[in-house]
Amino acid sequence: MKTLTAGRLLPVLGTLLAALLCALGPGAGSASAHAALTSTDPASGSVVPTAPRQVKLTFSEGVLLSADSVRVLDPQGKRVDEGKPAHVDGKSDTAAVGLAGGLADGTYTVAWQAVSADSHPVAGAFTFSIGAPSKTAAKVSAAEIDPVVDALYTTGRYAAYAGYLLLVGGCVFAGVCRSSRPVQRIAVGGWIALFAATSVLLLLRGPYTSGKGFGSSFDLSLLGDVLATKPGAALLSRLLLLSAAAVFLAVLFGSYAREDGDRTRMERRDVAYGLAIGGTVVAVGLAATWAMAEHASAGLQPWLAMPVDVLHLLGVAVWLGGLAALLAALWSGEPVRRAEVQRFSRLAFASVCVLVATGLYQSWRQVGSWGALTGTEYGRWLLLKVALVAGMVALASFSRRWTGRLTDGRPASKKAASAVRTVRAATGAAKAAGPSRKEKDASPERAAQLARQREALEKAAGRRQRDADEPRSGLRRTVLAEAGVAVVLLAVTTLLTGTQPGRAETEQRQSAASGGARTTAPAASGPAETRIPYDTGGTNGRGTALVRIDPARTGNNSLDVSVTDPTGKAVDVPELEVSFTEKQKNIGPLRTALKRTSAGRWQATGFQLPMAGTWQLTLTVRTSDIDQITEIRNVKIN
Image (cartoon, rainbow, N blue to C red; front, side, top):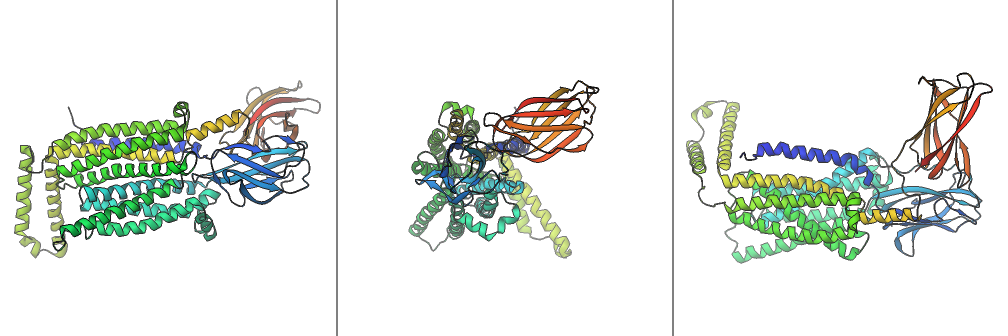
């Protein structure tokens, strides 16, 4: 049976990762909402007899408020709210703002935007009426995240998690298993990635939550507002902790890694204890910057969820980051000892046990029910994560088998022993001979070229020695496969932190079913189309009108009406009119001026629909001075 070599495995892993990223790209947009609006007072779409003193909103989890988090607009589009929005009775999942006195009857629009307690921006709008519904000129445009900012911020989140795993896992591997130059590169590379990603996230935090463009990243006032929030403070704390981590790296891979003959065993042990304590404090502190600003800080039992989240992240870092360090050591051809691999195997087993224990609690807390495990997006991604972890554990069993065959002395196979003798003879002869006469007599450029060629030959001989050792080659292949699955696992884990928890999604559905909040955050739906045949009874009086409403939700919409004759050819008519009426709330008819753009086509932009629901679309078509007909259809507005 053919073995899966590294050259064959890398394309497979690359294809798997590319497929995952393609799947994540289109699907991530639907998971942007975390704190869902569950109820409003006055209720969405309701008619109250007298003006309320305040507008109150209740969410599925805590939200962070700003000065413009809740705006109330009268039928003319003027603001009538007073004071800053605030939490009701100190409850972070509420928001309320006072209203001015003496409000007239009519339909009022409430626009809200906030940052959910797990650091993600949310927004939406709804309407209520005083006395009786009326037409409204209020224009509400929900703050949308700039695509460039969204892409950079998402990339930064992935890079931050990857950097933390490499930093912590590399340092633990160096301190417990083996310290070498490849392992140092893993840990230092993780520090650089985490520092760069955190800096980018801090600068982009303001534009990400406010819907502004990339140019506002260096707005100092916006940055000051970010630092005053919990996510901003967490990012700043992470940067400060990384400065301490830099000192830790310098000691771990500097003076401690060097064998110092003047240092006694007792002194070295004291330094090791100091590094262990200091490194643990820094690693826990870094993990806490995620726990205090994401899912663990909101919802049920945050006092327990945050420490559990820290343990979970530490377990992932020790396992996956250590796996990357082991792969780097094996790939470099270094003589990794059997005892060192066994120590990491025990570390990985302990990490998996921690992950299972903490993961069970997190699953119960975030999913809430068996139905949500398969009926919500968060639950489905969680099932994929569990499957990936199971796959890594299965691969780890193969790695343990190869570890049992490792030897620290001479290679077990004749092929490996022969390769070692050949390499040793070649490198020994090269060192003894020194630079050849041809190299001495050649020009500096030619001498440098010959030296590079000799170095390349030595590296090739080293790779032959590495590949000839069957146990280490087998271990390297299985560890490479584990690392490939780990990359996919990291992507899924990062995606989970940006997905609305299954428990919150279930609560939102139950609230909507009970009528608590019939209008929540703007839905990414539409456009809506309706095809309306007509017959005015006169000459050339038959045809079809296709009415397109984009995006078919509250706020600004555009209308596009195309008229064709029975053969499908575009045809002009003398008069065309479209209006919308909400019968239950007695709103409308709302009309807009259609502008002819080409033969048989009319358009209108900026058409306002103040609330969600089923609206009655009325189409009037006149084909001659006396031939006219009106058709009525129902359309759904989100």
